[in-house]
Image (cartoon, rainbow, N blue to C red; front, side, top):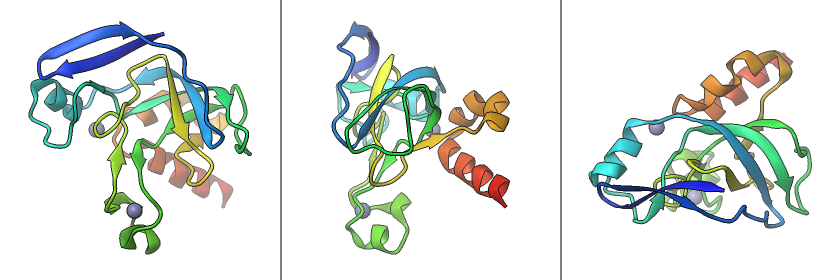
Length: 164
Ligand SMILES: [Zn+2]
Ligand SMILES: [Zn+2]
C-alpha cells in the first residue's frame, strides 16, 4: 500500500508499506478520502511543535472498514466510517470528567502518531468510538464530514439527532 510520509521538515515522500493487521481492539480502515488541513502543511514546513518525524500525516479521513480485531463489536467489514483522530487515555483527570479533547496524554493521529494519508490505517475502536459509522441517509455528505476538523464528533451529533 501507499503511505505519504514527511521524513523531516520539507521532505515529503510516497513510500510503500504493509497493510496493517488489526490488534484485538482495532479496526483497519481502507481510506477513501482525506482532507489536507493547515496542520499538515505546518508539519511539512517544520512549524508544528507537536510533530515528531518521520510522520505519516493526515488527521481528517474517512473510508470503509477492511478488517476488524477480535474484540470489536458493532462495526463490520464494509461499514462506511469517519475516523476521530484525537486519541485520549481515558485515565487522566480531564478524561474522567468527560473532557477527553484536552486529555493530558493526548495523541492526534497524523501529528503525534501516524495518520490517514495511506491506503489502510489501524484505529482503536473498542474502548471509545474513534470510528463512527456513517448512516445511509448521511452518505451524500460522508466524505465531506472527514474534511472538516471535528468531523467525527459532528457526525456523532448528527446521528444522535437523527435518533430523536
Ligand atoms: Zn485539521
Ligand atoms: Zn486522558
